Image 1 (cartoon, rainbow, N blue to C red):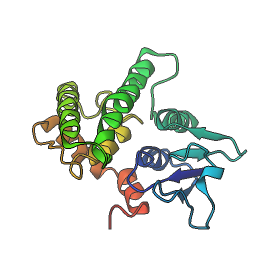
Image 2: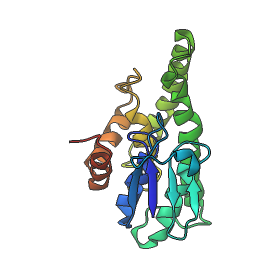
Image 3: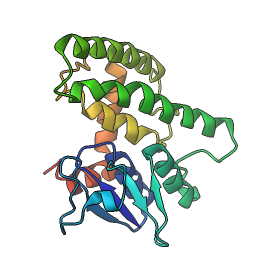
Image 4: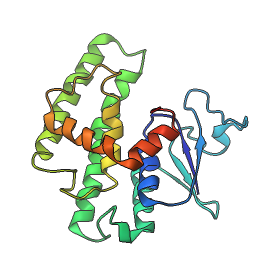
Length: 202
């Protein structure tokens, strides 16, 4: 398999999931600013949408969208219990988390990355994010991870999105459960391996 990623982007989530799964894969850098691979290939010829992540399977099938990719990864190694079984309420709850993170947090950071957005709109975006993060913090109370005491492939997505808080000027100190979650995630070998591979840790 090949994972196309851009360092520190949302593609870090499936990158972590692949390390957690222990699956063999090749990580291919596809910077979202240049859309050019190290060998000169135009990334748009691989993904016409131009964004990451993209997972290319051994038979050439290409999967896009992080929440779908991490569930595919989890389902390849059911014994590792990286996701609840398909068809269960717990699986739907995990999918709810993946959707929430994507629609309410990931998308919520979008205006902060856009230099064209005026300051007042960025402040409004930060206020909305604060409300969402307060809710996440409450949901994490008494839990190790989003689904309880067991890690799931939803957790890397929350970790990656909250990585953007500091550079975007979003203060996480009001959310002690989120901070504790981030510490637990940071200590996981798979997280460290993926971040080192992307040049995010020395």
